[in-house]
Amino acid sequence: MDFTFTEEQQAAVEAAKAVFAGVSPDGVPSPALSQGAVAEDFDRPLWARLARADLLGLLLDEESGGAGLDAVALCLVLRESARVLARVPLLENSAATAAVQRYGGEESRAELPARAGRGELVLTVAASGRTGHDPAELAVTARRDGAGWVLDGVQTAVPWACDADLVVVPAHTDTGRSVLALVPRGHEGTALAEQISTTGERLGELRLESARITAPHVIDAPGAWEWLRDLLTTGTCALALGLGEEVLRMTSAYTSKREQFGFPVATFQAVAVQAADRYIDLRAMEATLWQAAWRIGTGAGGALPAPGDVAVAKIWASEGVRRVVQTAQHLHGGFGADTEYALHRYHAWAKHLELSLGPAAAHEEALGDLLAAHALG
View 1 (cartoon, rainbow, N blue to C red):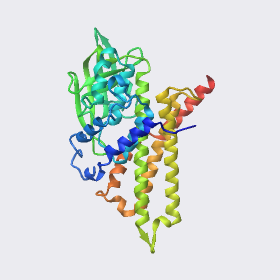
View 2 (view 1 turned 30 degrees about the horizontal axis):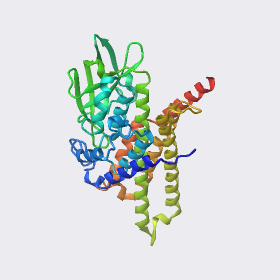
View 3 (view 1 turned 60 degrees about the horizontal axis):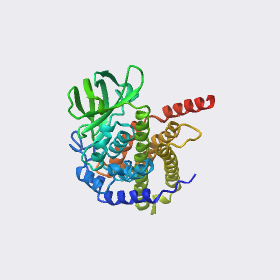
View 4 (view 1 turned 180 degrees about the horizontal axis):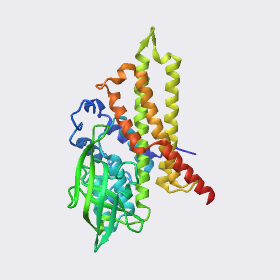
């Protein structure tokens, strides 16, 4: 399989590298040292630079001022953002606006994607459900009420909810199908409680009590939530890859300078073998990521439905990012436990990504079900 990136995708990577070049994780307090959240808002200056570089509309068509690229291009940019732990809702905003453009009605498509692509409007997605373990669409009910919809339920751990203008909320109807509601922050019938993630960033618990949403702000299209969910998951795998690659680079640099018995510890076989194993993890994470992103972006057929490729990517990303940061902490020795050293923040972000993706065993079980269903089909 040819994973050579196109000129347009490579151009997006170069633009991302230029934007993120001035971002340093050392400039943000450690979650362990912060009283509450590490910051009240996401990095607005960085968000403005991403907008000027046309990186907020990668998945949007040219009519909306976007680049007309695919999920692979988005994942390439997310990979670069994770290397510096960029504090911006790039994944959630990009995925949500792409879903609106792809599945939304004429009124929502007319203006919302273009504004979001210019950075004037920020979208996020409630994808964790009520507890973080159950399907997100089952946490909220949606019922028709005249010309609009009424939503009831709770979504927990909504990223950037305290700062986003709109939250895309998946919900289920009494007939069992899923819809997506675009809920404005502070909308009547909603309440938002602050939560703090392992990264020290602000999340939100969103409660909806008879929240009335007008019909143009509800996407009632088959497959909309499933497509958005798979894109969010694959983007999270891209974040895990970028973070893991930067952590391994930091570990290589440290063990090359740290000496024991007059030799750099990187020359010791036990250290080299552990680093090599983590390199293999990262390459597997990368291969499965591009497979999943390609399938989502093109809709191309294959031996399995797209959720199968996404499940494989989640298995490797969830396990791989955990192993990479654990090995990095071990090889850094006591220095790895220093909360003023950047590795501590990478470890916190890795744990958040791992928990967001869920346990690999659950994805292996889902993959087994998919394989069984495919064989019977």
